[in-house]
Amino acid sequence: MNEQAKWRKKEYTDWLRRKKRDNGQAYSENTVISYVSALTTAPSRLTGLELETVDVFEIADADRFQSMRIMMEQAENFAEVNKKAGNRAFQYGLSLYEAFLRDQENRAISENGDAAIKNSETELSLDKNIILYGPPGTGKTYHTVLYSVAIIENKPLSAVLQESESDGYRQIKQRYEAYKAKGQIEFTTFHQSYGYEEFIEGIKPKMLSQEDDGSAEPGDVAYEITPGVFKRFCEAAQEPIVMSSNDYGIRKDPTVWKVSLGGSKENPVKRDCFDNGRIRIGWDSYGETVNEETDYSRHGGRMILARFMTEMRAGDIVLVLHDEETIDAIGVVTGGYEWLEEMEDYKRSRKVNWLVKDIRENIMELNGNTVMTLGSVYRLNRITLADVMAILQKHKKGQLPSVIRQNTDNYVFIIDEINRGNISKIFGELITLIEPTKRIGMPEELRLKLPYSQKLFGVPGNVYLLATMNTADRSIARLDTALRRRFSFAEMMPDPGCLAAIVIDGEMLNLSRMLDTINRRIEALYDREHRIGHAYFIGLNSDSTLEKLAHLFEHTIIPLLQEYFYDDYEKIRLVLGDNNKPETDQFIHVNPVNMVELFGDLSETDLEDSVTYRTNPHAFRRIGAYRKIYGSSGQE
Image (cartoon, rainbow, N blue to C red):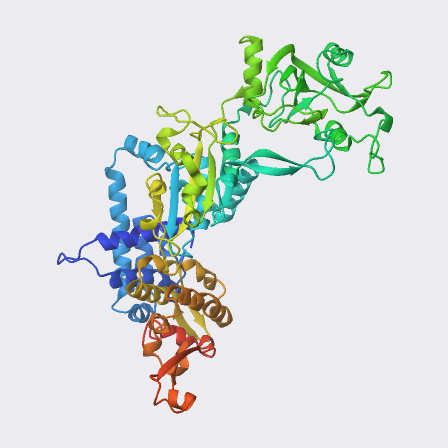
């Protein structure tokens, strides 16, 4: 069943729950489920006719469906199929589905055309912070793909569902992966050990090398402030977009490099570079080319040469060291590595287009209050393109050509299992910043100074938070209050109607009725948040073998019920209908324990006879054991 059909079936189910009978009474939940289940499974059983589709929920046009309904009712075995559905559920389901489609069309016609356009653009837009919640196996992670693509492409979710219907889920997933590779989607999973340091920023150790610090000894450790995954993502969402064709030759996503030209301050090497549009470094004794055979043991420089000769790319930005806190030039790399044989020293060179020279710009604060080290060439990871453009704007006095544009692309940060993390520990004081009204660019914009880097931080307006929450782990009522009131919630419940009736060993098993029965029993014995999702069974629609069904129950469903009911096997037996089955079809056997036989004379001990429970492996290989979950005789 495609996504649009699933959505339409859910809408039909909700419509039935709201609809009144002629006597003013509402349809019972059992009746609603039986009608939906009949429409899902019965069409495929009709014989003697060719239908354009056996999934009636793919049909959205009432007239088209009316023709299809008339054709189905003329099938040679319609009466038999209708009887098997129970209480003519198939016939009534068809009639009511047509009424549902006409009701939908009438509502659409009655709306003003302009209002409909506005609705598609605004009312169907997605909130900044969304939690998809529900029991396990209801497709929450699956739907993050659809939500993410809708957000990034500025489309209503229904439009993406329609695309999934027409072109398939796979092509939506491919676009999702492309956006993820581009950096517009980030995925993380919360857990009990996840903290502020991983999410926002923290101090982490780093092994030093002589390339990082000329005075470093082997094994020396330094500590540096490292941004967390969410902070890096927000910074990326704020990064300006480099125009594909710009006067400076800056490439898309340029690396910002710090380069020392002949050391610090004013010197002949630096002046030559400024005058001739290039940068130069040394280690001339290694010769023009270096490779794995080069012996770096005497003079070092392996990492610096690798950065300069191979990692640095045309279109990257270089900031030239003046002293440990200031720079005196900004340039754009325009050429590859060259060897200047005519020079006496510092023969390794690359061509550079100097944008500004002979400035004295202190970048200490931009660099996280960290001084620039002695290394000749390294990345300035804390300096952004926006920082560089701000410096250029200052020294160019407004004469800055169109190089960048504001980043208005949407970004989606996905948090799987958000309820498993300690929200106060992870978000800290920044929980307020995710509120839509507190985002950067909003009237109530709020930025807070981070405790480690001491830099102001805010959440951009183009960042969306999309989270999933398994209600079997923790209910919404117990979710962190500060988080709950900053998110909107989209409930994702089990959908038995998307499961087909399957035939195994010549016997029909109604998966929809089986799952619905199991879930209604779980809800009665426990609560609605611990029901079992349809995703566990969805694979049986296309691969309906007894072996797969047995493996699913033995290794997934039974262990899940054991966890839910804390090994209360009487309740597990009730959920599986074992109390109404013959012993051969019971998944859990009850074995009485004779205490006297087991322990002998108990006259001085107060022990009563009890029972033990054992799984019955033979029941998993009997199709009747599954059919009897939803009927004492296994009837359809």
